[in-house]
Length: 135
Image: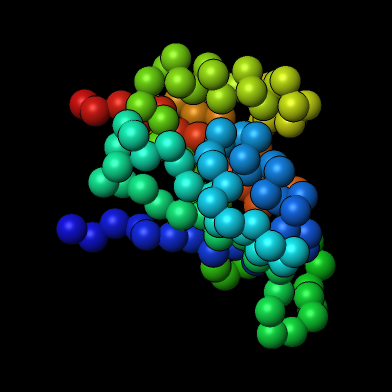
């Protein structure tokens, strides 16, 4: 089986990003150090799809560019699958309770006939929560 095991995001401030992603996703922090952290979903529901999100500050060089720009070559955005509309509404409520701004004010269309929530993380990376509808 091929699936994503982990995603590593280089961030300006690991603690700030860890707080953001743990609040938005509701994922568990399994390791947290000064400059990086590992988050995982609750794997009791879908243990075979457990994927780690690793957040770390630059390791090799100083940050040389300004803010994240999704129009540069590389990452445009990334999406987390959401299985039910109720789960998407829970994410929306959690984001509202933490004062996290969402594009279009919350649940919206994804421009491809789907349903999603879009926001940006503390470093300006675009994050999507996509309702996974099996057709």
